[in-house]
Image (cartoon, rainbow, N blue to C red; front, side, top):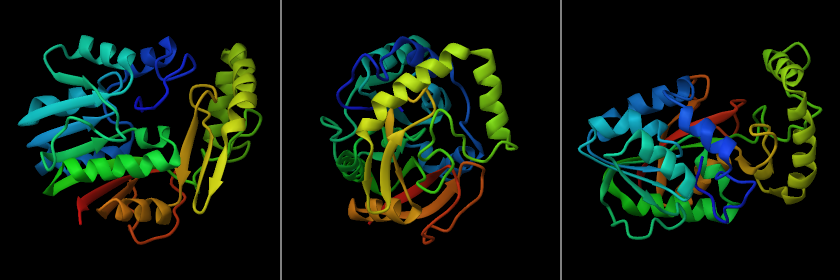
Length: 266
């Protein structure tokens, strides 16, 4: 993530959030690894990386690309990324318009780590249209998005999806026991953030457990996300669940927590 309008104190610019992103390396999950393998041909060309955060994907893509540009709306995230990659072209930029970036200029356009979900619903459509605009006709667009049918949707501080016997529950129980102050912060943040919840046809916005329920993010079904992409001028040609499964782009629903979508321009 890291591309978000209206950056506030309780935001992607917060010091603890930036610190976590700045320390992250490698793939987020098996699905991302599979998706990036699927676009390896295009990753060797001209690459636009949106929402670079602390520079995780910069380290994975910049050295093998013919050219690389990374953008993020958070100046603090960019500072962290520039410290890690001082010789790479990293710019302040808004995913919703990608202003000053030329049309049809990039072989691969990437928006990783569910960064698209940091935007409001209308902003997602704007960002997808902008991504289609700057991608070459024979290029690829790769983005990931949280799933409305996944375990992260509509969690509460006192409720963990998967049940008390699940690894997810045990993980969060250990975390709460080790950091009791985090539980208090989660309750406080959730009470504030839930006021921003929204519901639409096939999508919703809810507080996300990650980062102690500080952020309200977007969730959508497979069907809705594919439809959003199509409306923006993108055809989903492959999909990879976070656990590495490959759901058919034509399926309406999946139980994946989030999905990586590989697209081409229509």
